[in-house]
Each structure stands twice: as C-alpha cells, then as structure tokens.
Image (cartoon, rainbow, N blue to C red; front, side, top):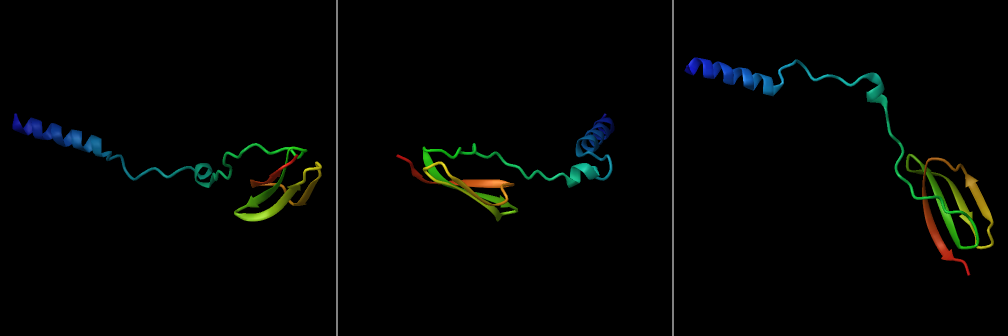
Amino acid sequence: MFKQSAKLSCVVALVLSGCGGPPQEPSPTEASEVVESTEQSLLWACGASRSFSRYWYVNNIEVGREDCYCDGTLYKFGKQTGRYEQVQISYCY
C-alpha cells in the first residue's frame, strides 16, 4: 500500500512539475513584435480657446513640434509622427 501511494505521489509530482521538455521558444513573429503605441490624449484642435505647443517624439527624440496661437494660426515644424506631448500655454480670451 505504501509503495502504491509513493508511486502515485511521484507521478503527481512529475505531472505538476511540467516535465514536458525544454520551454517552448516563441515563434519568430511573436518574438519580433514590438508594440510602440500607447494610449494618447485627444489632439487639441487649434482654435480660439487656448494656445499650446505639441511636441512629437520617436524613440524619445523630438522629431517635430506644433505651435498654436490664440488667433487660430498653427505652425508646424519637423514631422508630426510618433508619440506626442501637449503643453497648454494659456487660455484665450
């Protein structure tokens, strides 16, 4: 009886330890998949409500900028691609 219980315990231990061989490697498509997007706030529209600057980054390097003024003019510099950060300068009255 003790031998059967010991054998059963060994089998259960082997099953629980996952003795199915080496860990499976991810497929090439899974390994090379890089998610470069994060949730971003809505783009502010340039109008008469606020003046702001929007900075665009790719790999944490600034690649572009947009400046919006209270009269509704929008000046763009560089590329508007990648991740952005918006900084409000003032409310327009």
